[in-house]
Length: 333
Ligand SMILES: NC(=O)c1ccc[n+]([C@@H]2O[C@H](COP(=O)([O-])OP(=O)(O)OC[C@H]3O[C@@H](n4cnc5c(N)ncnc54)[C@H](OP(=O)(O)O)[C@@H]3O)[C@@H](O)[C@H]2O)c1
Image 1 (cartoon, helix red, strand yellow):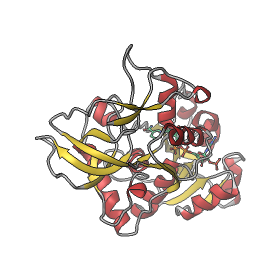
Image 2: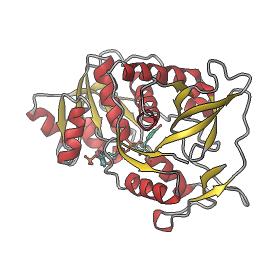
Image 3: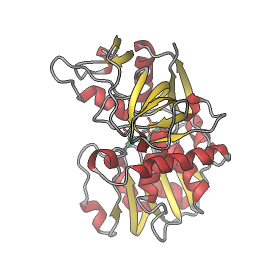
């Protein structure tokens, strides 16, 4: 089959992902073999491209957000049959879905509604799971006493899903941040009750809108640079849920207000252990929400074809830091 592969970690200006012939994926007992129809693109995958190399003589296939059709199921992959339309993530230590077919643990997959386009479905899994686990942890509810939430990066892939999930599933007042007219408009369309600019004085903008504090900050971008402002706007014993912690964070800054830190890595359950099947259940609930009109897919850019050119374009968009919603590649041929 064909897959987009590379060997050595590289920068965007030396883009080296190419379409190559690779062996068919080997199924584990609990795996589904999925014919990939659409791929969601994430900034995290561009970071992996920049930093992860294959073993000598090997090659890497990235991409852990897809929609497609089940072609076969391993003996322990219960609940699915050939022909099912599905969406899912995967395991970022295994080959991913930038390929014609992917082998994926059935516990991180869910069926999708009949009328949902594959491109729309591919815009959901990573944002839904990351936002859900950050906000609702392993209890499926916001922490007690959380009524006001600030979503930093409200127009991005994960921020868009966070705002929508909060409005669909909780009574929380949601403040999103966006810095441009088009991203402000999108953040409002996602359901934000108030939109402020993350390039300006956050506390000042909140005060001007009559908001003296928030209970939880869900921070998707620039967490370390926003840390002083985050601490300023949170109430004592409030909660910080960041998803972009790549370097050190000054935890001392959190102690004056006794703030809690809720870390999240969307592959923790499948890599480190935990209730892996909960991710399939969360995705199934999101699929129900989409079917019922409570949640909308967030694809804003669709690129056609599994080619090195579309993937380079997708990486260029992802690395711009200005994505609104989600870039998706439609896999054809
Ligand atoms: N921990 C995990 O499991 C996990 C899972 C998924 C993603 N992530 C990480 O989470 C981050 C966000 O992912 P994503 O898919 O939502 O990214 P994205 O779609 O590329 O986010 C783009 C958005 O970020 C906003 N933004 C840019 N700079 C910002 C800043 N300094 N402060 C606040 N907002 C800013 C932009 O808004 P404006 O254009 O309005 O400025 C834009 O709308 C990435 O670093 C990604 O790697 C982590």
